[in-house]
Length: 165
Image (cartoon, rainbow, N blue to C red):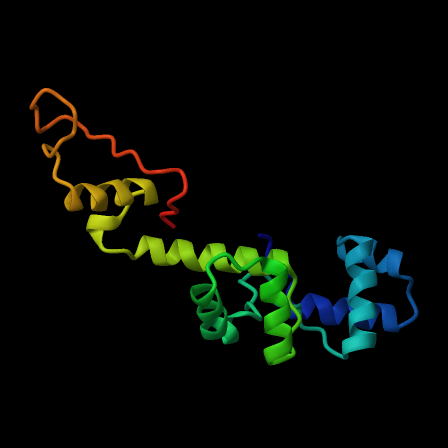
């Protein structure tokens, strides 16, 4: 990212324009763009300051102060929709949030939690974890229908009506 012009140059440009020269002639005289001179004079008139605006950095999320509330609501009702969550947040805290920004915020938070998961659970998908848990309940060799090889994978058929999650 380019650096801001020095405060010294900014002062000289504003002084030059203040002496009655046009903005275009100031730009040509100091070898800067016309838009820089126009925006600088406007900023001095509006803000009263020659200092450049801060550049870069991350914006602070307005949802971060409500982190505990949001994570509690998601844990309370795992299938909550983003518009419902936005409505609950607005009702509880008077903070208006767009459902899309809530979704992005939650995805970011949950991905951070996944990154810091215990090493034995990193990279394990939910279905693999479920199969692993079911295999612990029902050992591999127990009436699996194969020819006695206990190392062979076992497919456990669940009735269509039984919901696991």
